[in-house]
Image 1 (cartoon, rainbow, N blue to C red):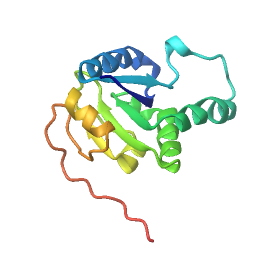
Image 2: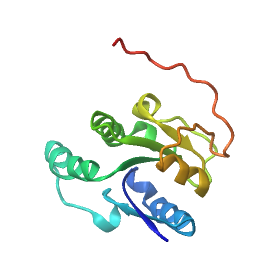
Image 3: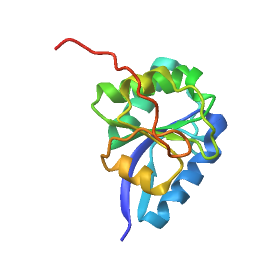
Image 4: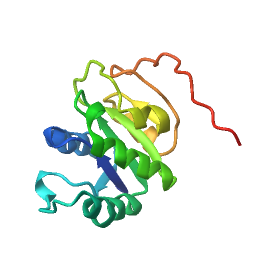
Amino acid sequence: MTKQKNVFISHVHADDHGLGKLKNLLKPQGVEIRDSSIHTGKFNNAKDPAYIKTQILAPAINWAGVFICYVSPKTKSSDWVNWEIEYAAKQGKRIVGIWAHGEKECELPAALKEHADALVGWNSGAIVDAINGKDQFETPDGGPCAVVPIKRHPC
């Protein structure tokens, strides 16, 4: 039985090819990804950043049950990716980082370091577990991440 998951996949457009690979990886696990993110096949001609954020990205993120960040070397420096993560965090979304297929390890976007609920390698079981609520942090090869000090906020 296939379970549909409404997600928003934050990524840089240079990584559009990886979105299809991610969806195909999860199909044998019985998970169909319904992706509301903006990609080459679903592009828009908007130019105004405020309009893009409030009228295109925010509704797409709000619709999603889970927010995924597709992590590659280019995502760390994307202002759009960091904004999307910050917005998702403010909406209380579950935030899952997924290392890009074949990635050896790269620096994470600053907002993902602060808000991730999980960070997993390219393994369908680990990805499904993370989407379904398991908090786990892995290197791209599936090994455990080094302990990262967490910024504490006063109550």
